[in-house]
Length: 111
Ligand SMILES: [Zn+2]
Image (cartoon, rainbow, N blue to C red; front, side):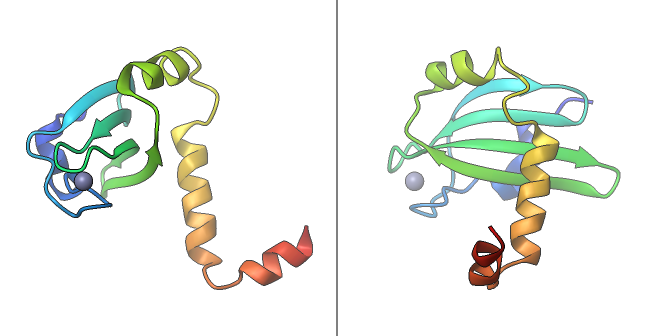
């Protein structure tokens, strides 16, 4: 099952200017049955993000990371090297930081 962009309306908002991505400039990077990674540029403010999207029977989870890479640069870096950071690893990191929110000092003291 691929992820048609029509299913991503809730994600289709720029995290910087908060305007809808209509139309967004999207460059697909990595895609399989349940994961999709894409580079998205906001047509309003020009800020770019890399979105990691995962779907399962319960819904869609996503993480967006701001980037200064262009779409084609992202494709060269991430499209070929699928194992740099997997979508599962990105989601694990997101869940870790979400659960540990507000505990930054305690985390840093453990290091
Ligand atoms: Zn924007």
